[in-house]
Image (cartoon, rainbow, N blue to C red; front, side):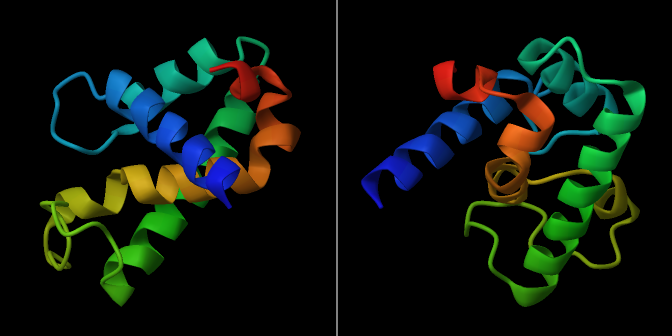
Length: 110
């Protein structure tokens, strides 16, 4: 359990590093750069597929109200910006699930 918590913390730190405008979420351009920095061998299709997965997880988490309390977007279902951004929690959850498949072992060294 401690390893899982540490790994998700590292993923959140990676997320924050690529949050260029420091708004607490990643848009597609920020996410795309993060993915390429993480694994330059990812295809545009792989990046898009992963982005969609993270968007879906972000939406599910937002609707269930399980984003972190400091997430400025929690509960803003009518905000059109919510539809195309990913939260750090959803990012960590999805990347953790798909890390070996999408990123290989690089993420373990981050």
